[in-house]
Image 1 (cartoon, rainbow, N blue to C red):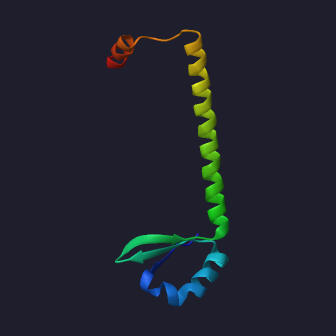
Image 2 (image 1 turned 120 degrees about the horizontal axis):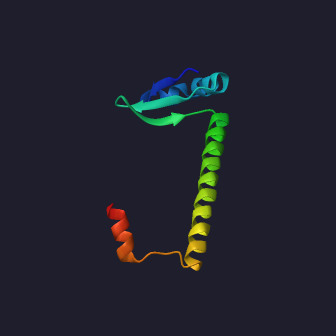
Image 3 (image 1 turned 180 degrees about the vertical axis):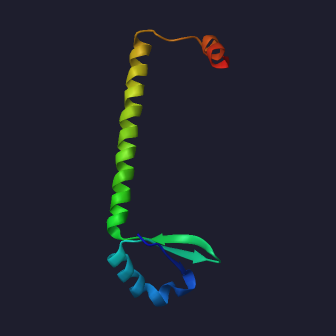
Amino acid sequence: MSTYILPASELRSKMAKILAMLKKDGAPCFVTKSGRAVAALLPIELYDELISSLEDRLDEEDVRLAGEVRDARKEYKARKTVSLTELKRLLQH
């Protein structure tokens, strides 16, 4: 997959060409200003794929975190806790 780099000053005059390249090649285009990347243009399919992957990872993290909270609540209800003094001692080692 190719990557395109375009100065911001050329963005307006080349927008139609850039959109055609995005659709044809599926490659992102980085827009630069003073030689530094300031934006990225990418095909909607790639955007959807990235967002979907990110949402999946966040969902997995939410499930893991929810499990840890559930376990902690069970331990608390079963009085499997330690005092603050004991916790500090454990954390120092």
